[in-house]
Image 1 (cartoon, rainbow, N blue to C red):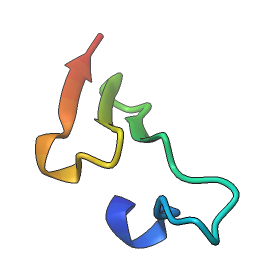
Image 2: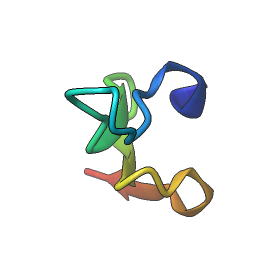
Image 3: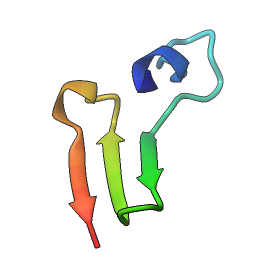
Image 4: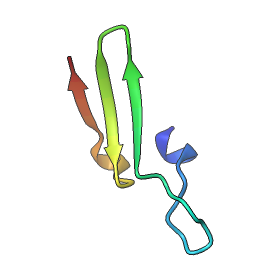
Length: 46
């Protein structure tokens, strides 16, 4: 899903997605994709 809504880096696009995050407020976790690397999502728990 994160990849589908991201903005690609392209000359015609003035901005691009630098990071994408999904927060789960129920269990206090975060899934984070940095630099468009959606194959390497980092998971954090509080």
